[in-house]
Image 1 (cartoon, rainbow, N blue to C red):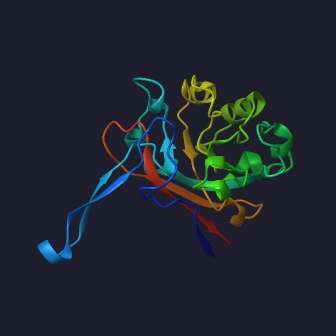
Image 2 (cartoon, one colour):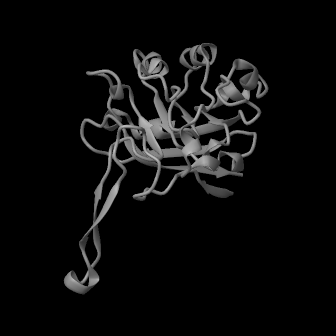
Amino acid sequence: MRVIDLTHTINETMPVYPGTEPPKLIPANSYEENGFKETLLQFYSHTGTHVDPPAHLFAGRTTLDQFPIEQFTGKALVIDCRGLREGEDISMELIKKYGEKAREADFLLFYSGWDERWGTDAYFGEYPCIDGEVLDFILEGNYKGIGFDVIGLDPIADENLTRHKKLFREHDIINIENLKNLGLCGSGLFWFGCFPLKFADSDGAPARAVAWVE
């Protein structure tokens, strides 16, 4: 069994969603002065590889800390979307190629290869997004979550967050953004975990996302 890290490292020069500030990793204690090292971390709750819950968009909906731990682990399937052009939607035709595996998964993870642009201006470009039919398919299923190797479920120009709102309005599901290394997970089902920081009333949190592949 191989264990694959699907998580970007948090650092002060990483890409962040437009309008937010990059993280700060501030030395709080040092070996020389205190006999140990400690760092004050300062970052937004949707920094780096992170998980969104319904409470990200809607007051009174489920927060991350309210989900049972089982919500964050299960069988996943990577949907290969690399053949799409910039700005082209992810359609059901791509999902249908995987047959019943797509319905057996707890998580659908969409692999565009966009993580190769991490750290460049191109990361904020017109990445592929799921279309309405795919979103309906997800909502009609029994999925724990969906995930992407891009910075958002919605196009970066959609300030209304149309897809986020449809996903979270009535369903207890999670959305994972800024994944990496999805191309190493193969074309079959595998075990997946995305464990966010647990803090009270959480509207989202950085997570360590991992695949276990036979």
